[in-house]
Length: 329
Image (cartoon, rainbow, N blue to C red; front, side, top):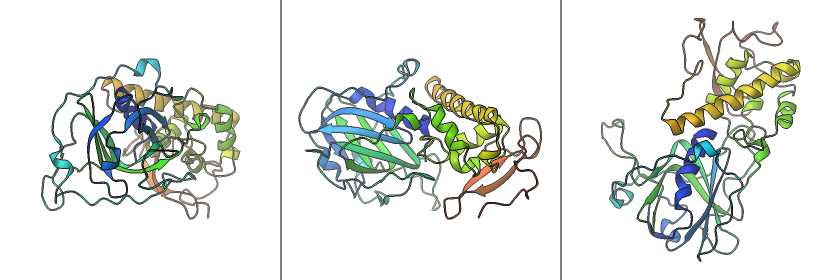
């Protein structure tokens, strides 16, 4: 699923529509009826980690201030030109994509199903959007097929939800799970891209007696951190993914947190500057120093296993006397 920098970009794309009324809807969602958004007012947008929250009200009212604004340098993104129409949002060719809830990452204990197909009236005013592996938000245009499917057909992806606004523009949401909730689930102290990210809490979490690659993907501790950031931060900090946090020095833990924040921030800045994300270890065969990179799936016992890339020479394991491929079980 998209990691924190991507969802922050989605937040930025939706922000210009705050204060506008929904005048037309479409989409393939079965769990939430797109028509239920008709005539609602889009009042606020917030972001936390990998989740986007959109507030809708039945009546026009003053927008409540967002408690998760984008950094000032990132508030100048360009809006894409208006193109396309609503034809691809309906009809027999629409994809039947599941809206069932799924856990967003290791250690994420927040609920994906909060309200079902409820109107945005009363307490149910916030739409929680959790994106799938290829989830995205498009502005004033639709996503186009980049390659043929297994049958050889060039079919454009079908949006889960399309919202046309009074300004004439529209938003299209792809490959995402949506549900109504009474309030956004926002904990900025664990959000790696928030100004309120709490380094002390992060360091304490990393110091546990478990592999640091498990802790990094725990959304309760590092909200917005995904597999790409995990691999890159560990390599740049020179730490083996299966090293126990309790055996790492305070300085090593500090460097690891620094690399998490630095890589994530640079990735986000690059999205607004049109730069491609540059990785040093993720999906590479050799590290920057020319060593052979190893790849294996790691994860907590009974939990989700994620592919991990690391360099045995640049990232020595602690403790070093355990077999390289052993995992805690």
